[in-house]
Image 1 (tube, protein in one colour):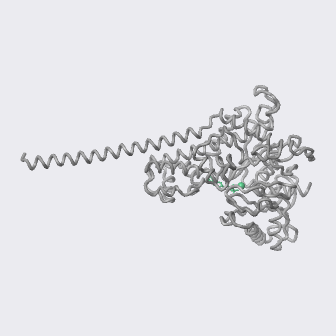
Image 2 (cartoon, rainbow, N blue to C red):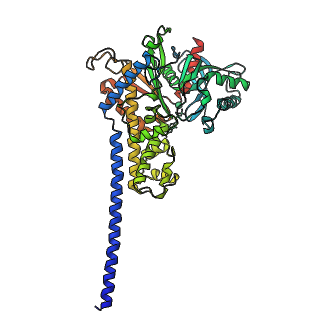
Image 3 (cartoon, rainbow, N blue to C red):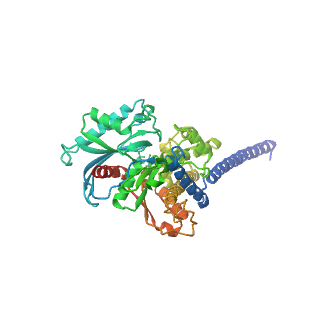
Length: 500
Ligand code: ADP
Ligand code: MG
């Protein structure tokens, strides 16, 4: 070989070696980045861990806080609000009633006709619309209430001959899914906004009065006969169908629970007398807090950057508005510390860009190549995400939702413990778990978009409830799903309150 050829050959070898070296370096770098991502995931998974022992601590804390909230005003983060609902609908109600439900994401209007027997419950019309976002943050409540009155007017105009309530004053339930301090069943003032709503003028105002005013301004002959928390509506429907229903929980945009309490246990309201000896208590459990809750740095940041920091800590770990954003925060950190999502990952800096319905769609993607995950990421503007990264996404969704489902179960078990339906005899009886009292059948009514539409959330919740209560006791605890339960049940409550 001549000198030139040798020089040429060695240059080629050097070039090949440096290409190989670059490739090796890239591979090493990419492996190191992947390792970082895996470590972030591992740390997050550990932070969210909720084994049954920890869940039992949450159960105990929930029951203790319930006692404290019933003992004195401000005695706990759980407000344990009186609802003045002591007689739940029993099936004998008759007539046509309406409900207007303001949720966290949707508002609904419906009409029910009751024939005086349980089987004669006819839900005649249901309208559901997203709440326009400008109404959630407007400077005056008048805009919101005028809009609701206008929507009701349109609903009634469409009735035609379908309804038999023409010419008669219409009786309406206002189902309201925010904390209210009631003075009676048909009146109460807003304590605070939650779930991203912020109309500051409204705190302290009578909610039913605001709606009645707007209806009167439009000249509508509609009477706001009851102001009903959405959980109380769900309990009413549950009880109407099955009187063993004593607890109701909502998992939608937000989360809350209510239950039937003995009046003598509501110590902060001594001398409270009801014919039934009990009253429905709206727990406002979204604000529950315990040091036993598995909280991560992502939860802390979500809370700090929310419109209501230091508030609704439990809700922020279990409710639909927030689960998507926890997932987003984990992805954001991963994409900041590696480039697994490529240059378009900046979309993940946008708060609430990832919705919980996308989380459930990704989590429940059963296509072999995770095409649904790819589609959702593409819709967000992130294309060509490799399969292993798509699998990672599914895993993050699983961690967030598993924790949410398990904590939700602990919350329910906490209520069962407080009322002595957990097989242990309540927390004040001094009974040990071994000395089981006669277990009664207990129905827990559940509704809300997260629960109804996210199978994995529901399964994790139900699985954890059995783990906490044990196989034997859980046979007596029935969790019943109730679609539109809060709205239908509120209309039933108007019927029963006007008839009693
Ligand atoms: P609202 O909270 O307004 O009463 P819903 O009870 O219908 O309304 O709950 C709506 C919320 O439920 C949504 O904001 C979302 O967080 C959650 N959700 C709705 N659909 C799904 C879904 N397919 N998967 C997971 N979560 C869902
Ligand atoms: Mg709701």
